[in-house]
Length: 257
Ligand code: NAD
Image (cartoon, rainbow, N blue to C red; front, side, top):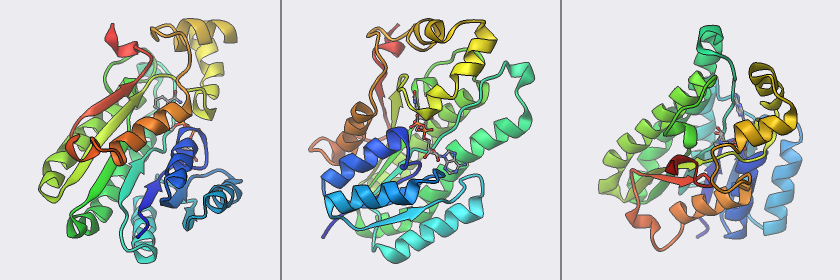
């Protein structure tokens, strides 16, 4: 029987690369994301890999809708074997100018939605005695830098949730881990460039060199495909059943110094 992977934020950037890598592995897919072209993207990826799929455009800021999405997925596929909480947003502002609404929005998308999905999908995973929960944290889930307080706090919280779920999932052979990428050149990072230029008073080239890649020991952006490979490793490798409650950094050496 084919396995099923649900990946939030999978019609763009890192999530799309993750969806493609699971499709190549023969998983049925649950695509999700706000992109207008999402339905077309989902159809193309699933058709090319000859796997079944669903596509949702649920706004993760609405917990009731997130719960309803999980219930529809469980109705369509007997079990969701892999849940990747990947969707995310960024907001760059000094702490004193960070609006509370933005703080709440970042927590809703990164933390609350992940919690609601895990809560909804765990019972079926427990019944099957198998499950892989992979949360897309960030190097910013482990360390901080200026002007991203809401994002950094939310990613740290997501790693806390990752560990808590690992303790409860272990008796059922359910693993829970977080992936911590460095900078990946996706729409999320592209969108930060103007704000970074403004707060740091730098050109675009300088923002890339002096902000994004400053702390990468390897002076390149991490690729979405590399992050997808890390997720697949945690989901479906010989080592995967024995890795739980931890973080996997794929950050070009950022957090080594
Ligand atoms: P992206 O902008 O390309 O994709 C983000 C996805 O999340 C999109 O599909 C978008 O529609 C979805 N999304 C955002 N807000 C949503 C909402 N309210 N409801 C539903 N869906 C929503 O960004 P990305 O860089 O691919 O980011 C994916 C994940 O990787 C995020 O959690 C991000 O924090 C994390 N991450 C990214 C980087 C990086 O440098 N790009 C580094 C570390 C971690």
